[in-house]
Amino acid sequence: MYAASNNLDFALLVGFMSHSVDNPDPTPDPDAVTSMSFGLGLRYFLHAGDVAPYLGAMVNYASPNEDDKTIGFSVVLGGQAWVVKNFGVFSHVGFGVDMRTVTTTVGTVSADTKHTTLGLFTAAVGACFYF
Image (cartoon, rainbow, N blue to C red; front, top):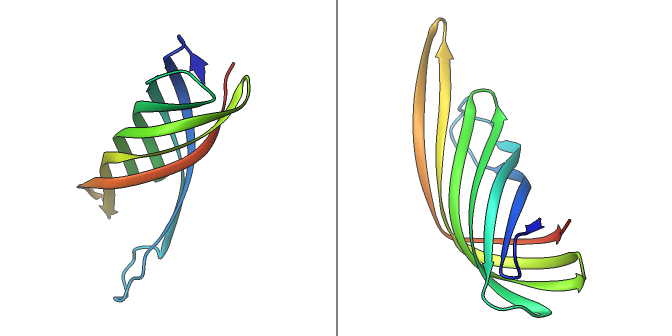
């Protein structure tokens, strides 16, 4: 995290996701997908203090394999508690949009399938280090 001012910070985001699906039909889709995600975030703190509420916006990118790519945008409302001067823990809720493209190749022919997902309630808990 980088504090641009007392009320504004920027973040480099790194995430881990494991998603499992119950596939009742025999399909070539995997039953579980694990991926890392990377992104950028911006948070505006409503006031300073040991516990500070904030509004934030984030953009992220994930690709569990070369044929599956997701770009996501989200808006959050949360709070951060300072443990020491440069380290805090946070929690937030919000909503977001994920745009996923899956490329399927059969022989020499490739086709892209696009999915858009609206997350009406998302939540996260984490820790941050300021430098």
